[in-house]
Length: 582
Image (cartoon, rainbow, N blue to C red; front, top):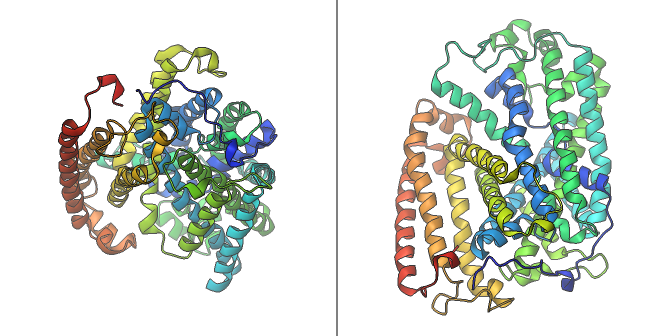
């Protein structure tokens, strides 16, 4: 029996999940929080890529990355508005195994990354008001407890809080944009690249261009991601068709919040203003290349708050710092909801511990899943995060590739009348919309850095390992419908799962064999010194040559595992038509 049957969404109401009447505007602000909550982080793009290239990428990336993701999420969400969202889309298109991979990759990346927003919020306040470790840690704990409680009260309360915080953030960044444009003093596009070249064409080699663009893409893709996250909560919205509508509204809103304050800020923060803000001489600013080189999020740098501070006074800067903290709170608040529903959906399909589907009787919220987010965040919020966060981008982008592939498959499978929203232009345009971001994702795998590449490989491999364990422990979809999803009696996995696992390992091995020579060339001139001195990475992540050897050895091991699994699958899997093995 095929795993790709057209079937009605599973009713998860038996677990006590409660539906809420939520407005389109509320969902807009929730998606805004999931994707942006302000332009925080773009400050790091400017010294790495250059001001001109930063602005260019902020304009281009929505075309090749975020808008396609928003459109695909709107189309699939209109036809399959169910709890679990993108996980269910991939499951229907590619089967139980690949659905689990997409759900696990994205969910675990949210669990890890969500801690970062707690760390950032505490850091903003500690730097602004000179807090000690104890007070900063107390704030982090309070933040986790408060927003965990709000999430246990239900999606409606999450939406109310997101609305209030989003309006504050939009007002604050609107203020930055207005301030910048009213006090325009220089061309924000000069220089184009971070080496100070005005036009960006002379004196720059191929590797330099790859580096400048790569650093911008790595952060820009992160900044423009998250449009699929609201889909995981669709089962708790009385009219889930408002989610696709809200998604289409949010795409241009986020572009505006990113692009206009950035242009305005670059146009007004001159060398003289930056020198005054940092208490250094103009000559010192010029020696580093100019004001744009001092943008960042660390002490001794300037950012969006300094745009209003330099032009309108310190009081506006303090207001902006407070909004920065609230922005981190808004992201954290909504991602608790999105991430916890990922594990709820996996558990509902018997692919995760069953306790994760338990719902609070009063509020109808999967409180155990929500509490697991808070517990993980409490554990990680006071640790050095660099060694853990490296897996995030790889996992995030891999899940998105699965969503784009699923969109092309489901356009052919889902009856057209079920598509309440359909991307215009026919199947050919849909393929173009999906393939272009997949190419961008492929490039991103190799330009984030060697440490990210290793962390990503390990993160991806955790998917098939955990699937094997949980599928055998909890039964998976076979427990819901053993006829439609039969088990192989020898492996206790779904028919064809060993072959899928072999394919998974071989793909990672191929990426490793490609990454080994590429990273050696791309980072070879500066990698050994950078990872040993600048990154602060622990252990083997501080040894560039050792990291390359690990990539090669791991790739060989993954290739061997993949081949062995394939040969075993041929021996023990019952013969089935090829169309049945997905």
